[in-house]
Image 1 (cartoon, rainbow, N blue to C red):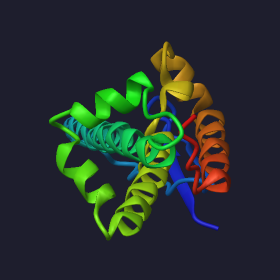
Image 2: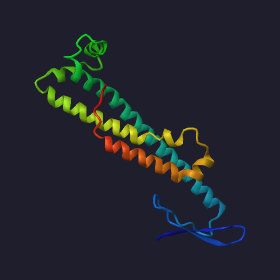
Image 3: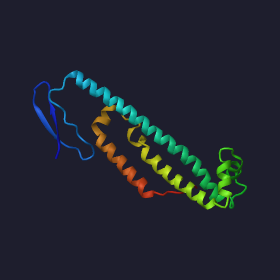
Length: 172
């Protein structure tokens, strides 16, 4: 089992901590200068910004694909049952969906419907997985520091649930 070694700067005492199951523990050198720690802190903050931006981008792209393909799957499943439905009329006249609606009406319509279903299910999965709001919204720094393992466990459970529901093709 890997351990992290921490040094109390006031007493000089070393303490070994067992490696966490859910994350890698970096071995901290006992002779770290304050400038090295400040540099590491800046690097961690920069890395956090990059990761947060990446996660936000994944969420936004998943949301865009979810909305578009939800509409297309709904249209393919309901256009004959509800031809006068407001949503049917809106989608049939939408410039954003014009080309995709034509594909659904083509001889390859089943193929395009299948692709739209796959993209809908996948975007829904990534939307769920990238949503950290249940664990991080309105959480102060101290709570994140003290309870990050619980927050990660909650998110792991959410990911597990999303994977169990995959492929979720519901449009109603």
